[in-house]
Image (cartoon, rainbow, N blue to C red; front, side, top):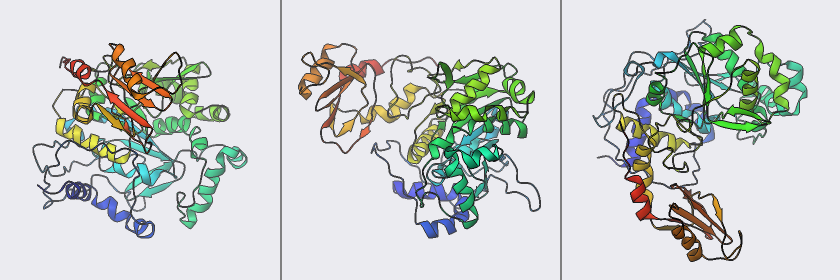
Length: 459
């Protein structure tokens, strides 16, 4: 068995040789990309040895000389070698319904090199049709990234302060300047203008997909689960799925969690009005976020959000609340995932791959969370979020022992967290992560958690 880090390095090199060669020049100037991760939850599953004697053909086609670059990348029929029966590398031909879904990833130039590359060797290896949008046109190896804002009103872009970053990116592009090294800010302010155009541009370029899934670059999609989740849904109806959030009395599908739009909805909105995004440009300026603007567009066309939670989930696997409501539900998305988290989840998904069986929250808990739980951890935030009172006050100079007693007295309490003047409990389980704070301490009621987690789910 090779050392863990060696196997991971070999796996990346085998799967992404072309991509890495395309970034050689960049890395020679910048140095290696380092991911700063604020938690240290170790992976508990073994890494198999990998046979590199027959490296895979790169699965994405480069633009042909003299031709327009393809809007969406397409997987070829070549399969990477399977090194061990423990890992099943799921390709589109293995997954019924893959051809029906178009995946859209939204990112930005200031975060692109941090968040996007991991998807090239994980998510996109089994997704046949996808488009990547950012705030500048560029390429990473064979992967084409499109400027989502190129068609925005020119006068608005040049005059509105939210577009200061965008205009700087266009100026620096010919000079090949790295926006992260220049410490540009304003990515969040600019992001809210993208959603309406990613919607309309995607449909114009691929109007025949049955479903369109929109995610952020720190979102992980369990693709086989998504395809099974869609089997009883009618793409000809005007449907808009997501995890609900609210702003200005409008319920919208949270963008980082991922929202799904049917072909019927696309036909109704964009098919009947190809320039519909133009009508909502100024709407974005007064909104909190682009997913809210998109929901306003949907409502104006008579389409309300259909709840898709808990399967569409807005947390990473270590801070999602594992409770009875989620336990037997299939997982479709996780959000706020660091690149190492995405790779760990991808390897777990391949290990677990069983035909026609969903990965449930229960399975993720048993694999990632249960092995990490102990009675107590110092300098650890387990994301308990129910503020509790000690000695009649919500904030006081109580003690760890008193906070633990509050949890013990509540038969539904499964964990708690204490920090100097605050005691919080939770009717559920989260693992959380380490923080550099010696005043923070977390605890878990292991006997109660064991009884809770013994619940089985029908398959």
